[in-house]
Length: 228
Picture 1 (cartoon, rainbow, N blue to C red):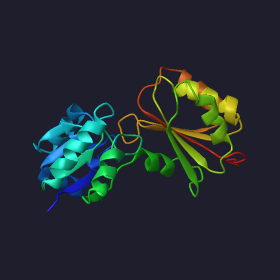
Picture 2: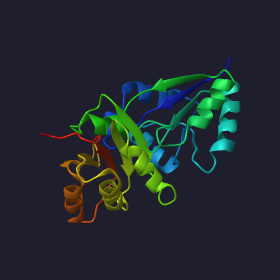
Picture 3: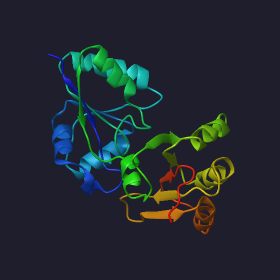
């Protein structure tokens, strides 16, 4: 019988957020495919899990997916993890999931933390309709994406690095309008977690007072939404 591919969510910051089911699976599988084995090892060591780890990232995804599915077809079980949160959400993973399904390997979700849902839940903005953009293009196609996002009748979720968060907020002002409401979440679940809500101009001023640090999630309101 073929093995099972487990897609396992891991904490986005606070290690206490891992589920007991995730720990059980990680301790029992034959192999753990990790976006960065060094990051995975820190998590696994914390919980005294010593199972075999192999790398699975953007640069080796196609080759590694084939290797791992061969392993699954031989009867081994594999857990897929990203550096943080739920695999396949702006992270590598869909290729192995797709290939596993094509070869009739069972794929099981071990749900848990995700920065998308965490940021939406504390944004204070409407969440009945939302669009997940993830990481924007750095240069080519960036303006086109913003124009597309500006026309959506939904809250928009953007992932951003500390190096580009001010640039992205400025682009929100330019292409989506300074009257939008943004919720900017930094370091969700970590020691220095904070959330700003207001217009993007005020957000730029707030985060320009000191060098931005940590990972950011920006939730942008649809046009016409007001906090009043």
